[in-house]
Image (cartoon, rainbow, N blue to C red; front, side, top):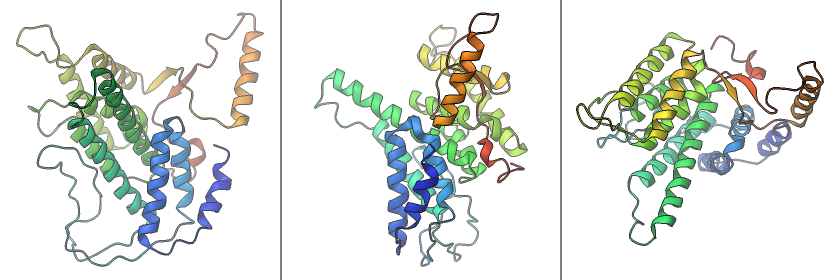
Length: 307
């Protein structure tokens, strides 16, 4: 993470003269973040820093109407822009943010399509197929986690994240049961942004709606009066963990460490050594810490104060 400050000016020094080149740079960063999900926050910081150093480009008017934010006709969730769709003649410049939105949508929809329609089932054995599905599932979750961290840095709008949450859980079509991987993604996204998203009225309404939908899906049975739920126990536990975390004000005891600078690691080790020497004997659990999920990064508080 401490390398971000040196990487930003190096990327900024690259001569980018075309809009397509800007999209390529963003796409490379995005793919790198999905390949290294442990560093999602670091890559989001990198994109945030690039705002001031990457150029923007004028775009020709296009006959293609802007995205409306509604799911595709087949119900596939999409990521949409919050641009004003009432002015089709106005073509905003291609900036880092618009390029980022385009890349997010392309990657997300590609991963969803791979999850929903796997054409390799006839050419692989069951073990290989399951391994492939797990890889795609993990990549999809890393995708929404990165989207969440970009939102926390105000690189994506509340409207974008809110629509994605609703479409993943089919809030607008209560009879259509979402796939397990869609529910996992919705939980991952809310765990990444919940505290900040719920801090404003529009976001709070979205969180309430989606969590109620999750609760309903978790309690719903395959057959009337039956015991078998819609999802496996693992997914039910993920939903329950989300609901309990929200009820606790998004505070959670975390054992999964995020990427830290060397200085942060040194301070944590010193703290654990001090705790070990106290009269109680030792720290409760080395590496564990109480965190509030979905907060904006502390270093951004002065920049994005006011939500």
